[in-house]
Each structure stands twice: as C-alpha cells, then as structure tokens.
Image (cartoon, rainbow, N blue to C red; front, side):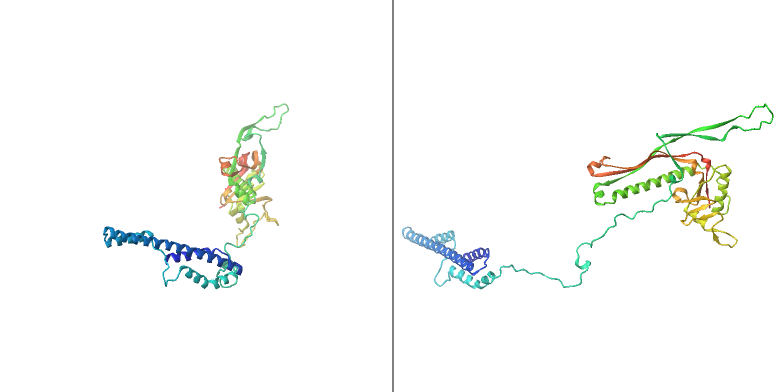
Length: 408
C-alpha cells in the first residue's frame, strides 16, 4: 500500500497547484487526473507481469537444477528469497484486492464537492483577530509619540545688562603695543609765585611723566559643532553666535573689573554706618582729589541694602537722602548713576566708584565671529569650528581716580 499512498500524495500535490474557478476547469482537471491514473495503473500492471514472468522462469530453473544436480530444497528457497529481495516488493493486483486505480478514483469522488465549492470562491480565506472596540487614546491606539510642535528658538539664559566697556571709552590701536604717558604724583617741582618786586625772576616749574606700556592680547574662544547639527537645527548657528558673544563679554567684564579694582588707589574709606553713607564719604574724598565721580558700580547685595536702608530712630526703612529712582528703575545718588553688576565681577558687598574717563579699553581688533571647516581634523569628521575673538586690553590711565571698598 506504500506505493499506492505515494502515488495518491503525488497526484494531490499536483492537483493543489491548479486554480479551479469554473465547471469547465473542473472537467479538464478531472480528465487530467483520470489520464494520469490510467497511465500509472498501466505501468504497475506491466511491471507486475514482468515480475511474475521472471519469477516463473526462476522457479523453473531451480526445479531443473534440482532434478539435474540434486540441489537441496533449503538452498533453492534461499536463492528464491534472494531474488525476491533484489526485485523488491511489487504492488501486484491479487484477486479480491482493491486496485490502486479504484482507490484513487474513489478518493477523488469523495473530494469532488469540496473542490467544486472552492471553484466558486476565487478569494482566499483568512482569519484575523479584532480587539475589543474602545475609546481611542494615544496610550492605547498609538505606537510611538504624538506629534510635537517646537519653538523656533531655544529659551536662553539671562543676559548681562551692564558691561565694562559700557562705562569707559574704547581706544583703537593699530598694533599690539599701546603706550601712553602718565603724569607722576606729585606732578613735578616748583610752583607759581607772585612777582612782588619789580625786576625779580619769576618762579620756574617742571612736570614729570612716566611712560606706560599696554600689551594688547587676543581674548578668544571657539565651539566645534557637527555640520549635521547645524543643518538639522535651523536656529543653531544664530544661537551659537549669540552665546559666544555673551560669554566673551562676561569674561571681559570679569577680567577688566578685577584689574581695575585691584589697581584702585583712591581714598577707599570705610567711614559710615551703612552702604549709602560709605558711598557718600568716598565720593567726597575722591572729589577732594580733583576727580569727578561719574559712576558708582555695586554688587546686587549693596544695591538692595541702599534701597532698604534703616533710617534709625524708629523711622523704619526707606531711601536715604540724595537717592532718586527714575520711572524706569534707574537709581542715582547725588546725581551719579548707580550701576549694579554680579558679585562675580566685583565681589560680595563691594563698591567700585570713580572717574571712568580715567580708564579705557584698548582695541586692536574688535569682536568678530568666524566659521571654518579647516580646523584640526574638521574636514574628515564633518565638523565646523565657530570662533569668537577680539584683541583687547585694559589701560588704567589714573589708578588714583578710583576707590574700591566694602560696605559690610
């Protein structure tokens, strides 16, 4: 039966490749299957006939050999068994046994209705699972994230409102060395005198000067950024430029304020019981030295203490006399602008006041920003360097024109 089953499986596989869509095609397929069965059955019968013929010939030969040579029956049986083993098992059609043809034909007939039904259903059948219907939410019905709307520019840190270069003059220099002459203290020898006697010689004077050299250096920094980031974030270039400018100014402020208050040689008095009083005393002392105070720079803590001065004698807090506040919030003391800057530039509870015409920023090259791909290995890595720099220096023309002191 193994041969018959193999034959049936082969026919079924062939038949499955047909796309039966009409009764005409069913008839054609039926004829093809019948023809195939007739051929396979014919081949089996021919093979069986050949087998029985060879078997009869072998039996006759054994009988003859036994008669002539007296061959043992056992030996004859072994030879016959060997012959059968070599030929293999044949699917002979014995009397009373159902033929391969009839088996296949019956199987086809049993499946005919199903084949016909499939012919009328050209669309493929498939199964799908549908989850329970519910309210749509991003959490339940969305794979990924909801669409976001981005602002066109980032929210940046606060910007410094006062910079050192806002208080002094900026002097250009063609080279990196800038020189000036500072008059000595005392200014010189001799003095004016009245000519009380006719014909007497007049008084002679002289003045002493000292040459001062200022070396102008680059104050610079740079950012290295991927070209992809510049392309993918449209605001990035303007953002980087603005941040470089802010950081440059902060560094310049810190350096120049520090240099100036370290060199300040004014009175630096500590007279007075509160910040407002100490400022007034130092302004008076500096103007006694013939300098006109045109700016008072304080830390935030000092600015607050001035505006919340304890008036004493149970009067509570208030604004000291001589302090005025404009509608825009600008504060002045005795008509002199009061500026505030972070303690990082000036120090906690500190005041720097003086004649700000006696200091200057010497500038050989103004602040500029440039971009380049030709820096280090930028070309290989698709990086861009953004550089900000200026060639500047601080010139303290008259150190004794400034006072620096603590209020607490």
